[in-house]
Length: 265
Image 1 (tube, rainbow, N blue to C red):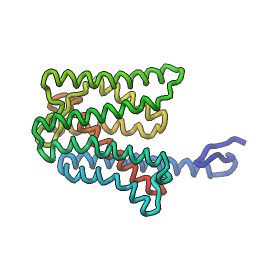
Image 2 (image 1 turned 60 degrees about the horizontal axis):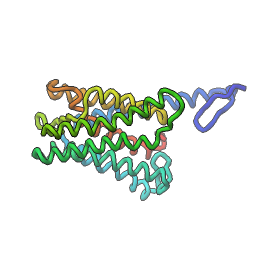
Image 3 (image 1 turned 45 degrees about the vertical axis):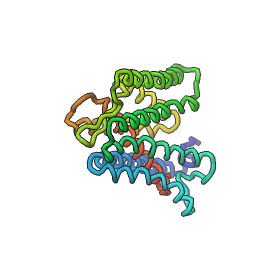
């Protein structure tokens, strides 16, 4: 008998419509997940421009899904509370939803002066650097060109980012600038760096969960929306430092809360 893979194992092809129904259910599941992430990204973009304070509260409070799930006796993505995987996801949510978004949105909400913006800029770029650096510990360097090149790309990203920031500091250039009162521009990453970052991140994620490569597409969409909202001024890469923390935070927050719903598991 020909074995057809379905969720939870395999079944004989002669089992009738079960494999077809399982495949259709999977397509429906993935479609709703993608649609939800797109809506959340667009909503976060709109809130960043119109109500940044509300967006910050939503993104930071999204981390509460973890303790709330324990109190309610539920699970997020079927992760067992207080196990290592559970703690890793909690730390990831805190790291992504709070550390980069507070400095970025804080520049807009509290109208920080130059010195405060400089500190905020270095903080966000340090989080970005850590976000690349920690993956080096999880790289499975296989004996193939793709794995080796992707590992070397991550190392190159980690080296080039602080070099560029040091150059900005040497010329007394602030890494952050607020445009039109509601757009944060960052000058720590070049366009070539962003292209390499996108390819590296997509390859790294695809090796573990191919569906999550959607977030690499979404941050370019959000970046373009900010760019056109600001009147297409400056360079497209300057909008990355606002787009990426907001988009990734919204993506992680959406994923965490979807994980409470049995249908999305």
